[in-house]
Image 1 (cartoon, rainbow, N blue to C red):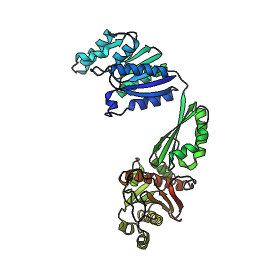
Image 2 (spheres, one colour):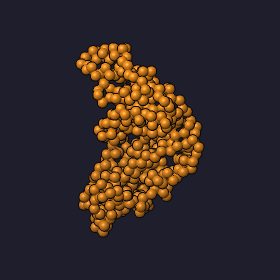
Image 3 (cartoon, rainbow, N blue to C red):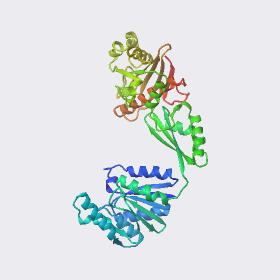
Image 4 (cartoon, one colour):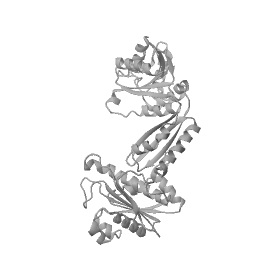
Length: 424
């Protein structure tokens, strides 16, 4: 079964609202084994909708239309469906009575235009709306069938789940999500080429600063389990979770399993690392606190970074990150110290270019470990600050995760220009 999505609304085209319906429908249909071949947005214009319906059914078996079923003058989806089918609109007396009764029950005035919701193309089947007033419609058209549902998300979802999906047959599709950190999307895709080549397996990539989510879909649980296992083997320690689990929660779980705690020392991130580690309820069990030592002198006075080290190299140096991690661990009494220092921009600092970052992890009884990276600068320095700071947080959490799991710092393929990972 091949389905096209047709979203109606000037407000979507103008960007006044985001098209969340299409995302929900895409996920829901894919899970049911229905192939979504295209997603189209059109304005509130009858002729445009008619043309889009005809074009959609040249490519797909069915089309799901969202929006344009209300009672105002710009709700023209019913008119377009009737015109596409070559039939007239007829007022449904039972539906009209329900609309009038609903208005009385709710105690709201009803304009006559609201009765447009009772107009149904001849031969169409009404799809009852358990969450609202306007019903959905099922209309047979040349080349396939159109399902029209309201644009209100709650109403759309109720009608689709209860009445549309059961009619759309397909092979149930199983899915797995692998979450990776500190590896470029292109490198993840290259590593997973053997998985991409498996018959009946599809991969989708969702990058964000410092992370890539990989969604693996296949027909049946056995097939997707096999593909996910193969992908995890190929990606190695870059995979930090096989579920919808954020990196900070993974770190908290690892710390809790060891009855351990962490404290952070931050420079360029200005508190973002501590904020990330306090986002989870119950995080106080493993996160003690942090020191934001943004000014260089504070790295000495608050964290004990040697003054001669700062004088010789400035604040942007791997040994400074190591000393910051050691200092915050000792001062806050944590099992682990995690520290970041670097240049977020817009200008270089201490002779170091924008994107230079050093991250240190320290624990009692062993030397600190430092990850030094050159993060990419997208656009000018001002626009780069946000992504660099976010990527720094991801790199810091990932380094601590790897340290807790005794993994190699990067498996040899964390791709960041100027990579440097070594004991400090």
